[in-house]
Length: 281
Image (cartoon, rainbow, N blue to C red; front, side, top):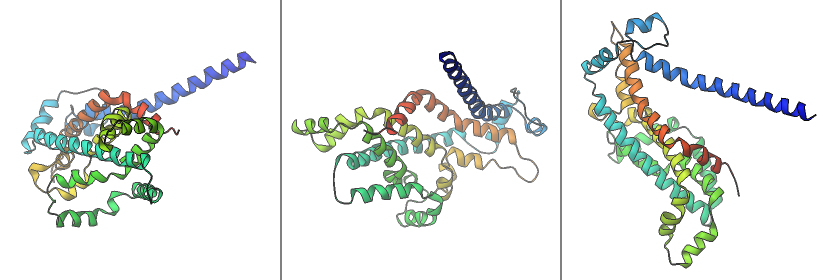
């Protein structure tokens, strides 16, 4: 009986490892092909797939430059928008989630349910009204239209609420109040240090979403010098005679570098943050 249990346990573990290996391959191969194609010429790409890099990286970069595209400027624009959006999202979302978890007020349950409804509504459905609203405020063709609305990020508030519900210590908050700390002081000095894993996880998702945000930027930003990297890559579409696929892949490869760096630095927070957010007291 014990031998059978041990055999089944080993068999299950092997099965799990095989599934994880398959998922790893599915995740890594497209990224590797993107990097490889960034080093290949258009002719080589049209001939079929290859897992080995080529020697046309510098040539593809020269094509990017010849099209009047400044990847450095696009990188700078995307970095500014992504960092500002991440800071705004994390701070105000955690602040709102803290209020929903700690305080009792009339309509709290209704407000929480309303946030869930907002999470399920795609941005594309409200983009026309959102554009008119930004236009009346004079914020079109302005990075503020991409950053300031994230003060009310329903998805981030929902995640923050789930996380704080699993780790908030009301006795610690009461002790801080007895010591004379203000409500904002309690949030900044007591709650935020405890919520670093969840805030870091939220920040990673917020950064990636903002960095890859093409739709909103395409609708709201019109000046070429304000284009973010995803918008610049969109301008690499070919003319009637030739499409430079190598340059397009190089542009796409450049856009994923910051995301990989962010994940490499903060990935240790993702598991702990999501695991805590999935737990209840």
